[in-house]
Image 1 (cartoon, helix red, strand yellow):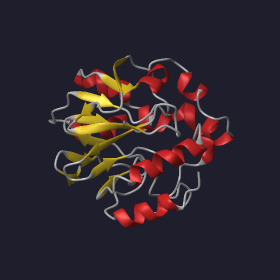
Image 2: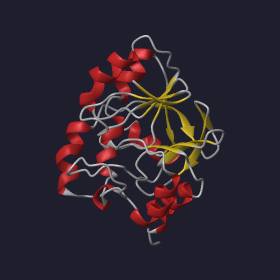
Image 3: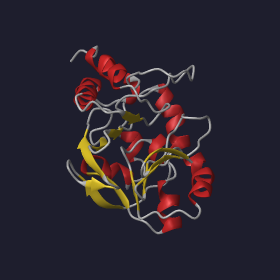
Image 4: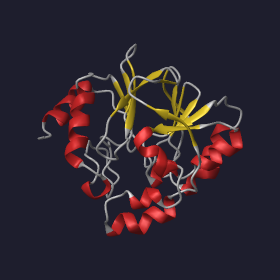
Length: 222
């Protein structure tokens, strides 16, 4: 694992930074695609985990969720609006915008559903971080914010990698993956107002440049 801050570690993935999974104060945040199960479980051996939380219910974040929860005997946490998709067979794909690419890779990445034990809301505490509701990419997308050191785990509101070239760069999620791109832009602007010093993305390497993030968000028209 890669230590990013106190009580925040990034699990190593393949390709690097393609599908990020974090250990955040004893809570595993996201779980990559289904094919990441062995890699995730191997890195968590000997670690204390008391819950597993999703930033949102998409195939590349939920894929190994059931395996994690059953292996470690921990509950699954998710937002109210995304909980039904996370625990219902076939609903994740049904709630994604129709596009040939998502239809091609989504079923391959999606993991089996698992019951959601806690529905997260704005202001809830998770692993020492505060939940911020950041809808747009999905109806119930959430991010995690720690004021004390201005650390932000923002899921897919913004990515820091080009999905086709693999090069680091700040980008909006591809529109064909987002339920409401304009609402997602509003969420990105809200997060930029926090002036985070460390930003951990669902896709792409972490960023320690608040000005760069703020300038990117400022260019987004709503």
